[in-house]
Each structure stands twice: as C-alpha cells, then as structure tokens.
Image 1 (tube, rainbow, N blue to C red):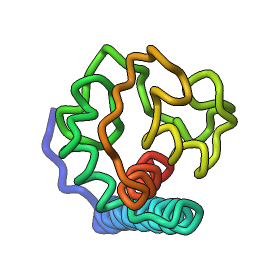
Image 2 (cartoon, one colour):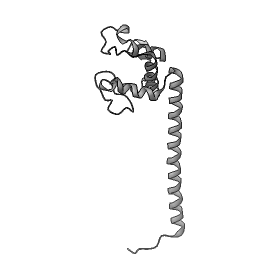
Image 3 (cartoon, helix red, strand yellow):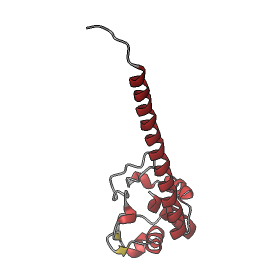
Image 4 (tube, one colour):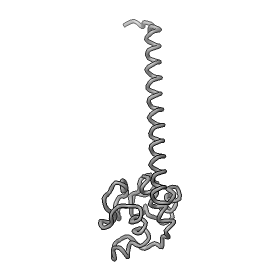
Length: 139
C-alpha cells in the first residue's frame, strides 16, 4: 500500500462537511435553549412564580429526598412519585385536576386534601408554592 497525498478537492470537501456538522450542532443547541426558555417563561406566567426561586425552595424543603425531580442535583428519592413530566399529567396526587391552582393548593396543604397521605405539611406559603409550581411546570 502506498501513501498518496489526499487531493485538495477532497480536503475541501471534508472541511465543508465538518463545518456543516458543526453549524447543525450549534443550531440545534440554540433551538433547544430557546425552547427551554419559552417553556420556563410560560411556566412562570401560568403560576405567577419564578422557576429559579422554585429550584431553591425544592432544595430548602428537601423535596428530592422523597421525589425524583428533573434537573435538580441529588433529587432522586424513591418514596414519593417521580415528578418528571408532571406538567403533562392529567391529575395531581391522583385526585386533583392538574393545573397551577391545584398544584399550589397541594403543595400548601396536602394533608387537608388527602388526610394521611405521605406528603407532609411543610408550611409552604403561597409565594413559595407558586415558585415550586413554576419549577415543576418548567421541567
């Protein structure tokens, strides 16, 4: 086998293909970021909360000790339900129609809604419930 030099046209073609692949990857990343931002903005709007504060509140209340919570480091609890995709579920806690007001009510007073449920009363106020709801609907 002999080592022949790669023709210049083939080198240009390879460079062009590499450039196209890089451009496609960058475009995909930009579209993903824009979509995620739209989802987060919508979640904030429908809940009246702030998803960033919700993330902090989820950590503060230790929610990840019982639940799997998407994009929350260490939130891999197996006691309560996995909260991934909660925004697309029909019901919350198996009883409430899924919506921002019901989510807020459940977070604030789970024992009033379902006495004896494993979800404890944590003294979550309305503003914090809105923030946690925003996070959960945004992820």
